[in-house]
Image (cartoon, rainbow, N blue to C red; front, side):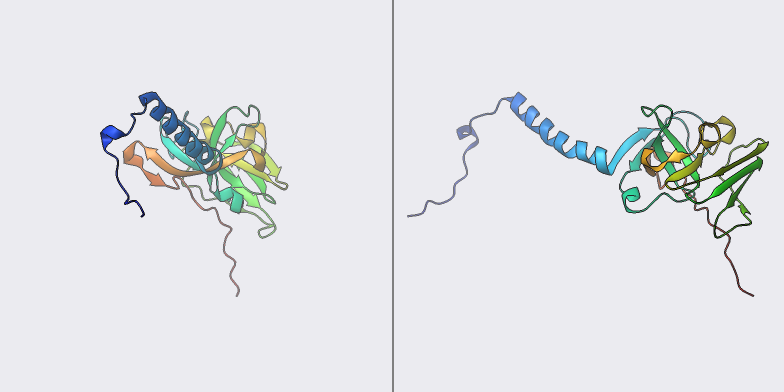
Amino acid sequence: MNEEPRVENKEEVKAEHPLTEIVRFSIIAILIVIPIRMFIAQPFIVSGASMDDTFHSGQYIIVDQVTYQLHSPERGDVIIFRYPKDPSKFFIKRVIGVPGDTIKIEGGKVTLLNKENPQGFTLDEPYIKSMEPAPLMTETLGEREYFVMGDNRDQSSDSRSWGVLQEERIVGRAWLRLFPPSVLDYLPGETKIESPTKTSS
């Protein structure tokens, strides 16, 4: 004869030591959190003024680490990457140039030249807080090379000073801005920088 299923009374179950439960919970949490932080998303806190007014120091963001496994960064993306001169530090900047682009900076203007626009086009950058006129600078990007700048150009250490950014140093793109709640935002600061549309006569 089959036994009927039964539910044990609370008093019949041997009580676990509280520490055992804590250890078990901690192990499960680690097994879930670590892969997420390593491969999917991780939190960062903005520090410094290089991205003012788009981002301010102390804002809390979640970085998407999956998208760039599917496609490469695009112009206008706000990315987080390991600083080329000290990989232990993380920087947040905007992608201005992608592989194949030539970036020309003169005065307070940025011009992009590429296969589609051999004559170049000047970027319309409404996100910039400030950019003082500067001497002519030209940089041509090779494979897996990016040119990045902060939105607060006069307070930013970026590709103008330390050179191009290699793709393997990119951690991901700014995906969510969570704190403070008043600035909660999806894909914060992202702006598509597109080539002028060609029309036929």
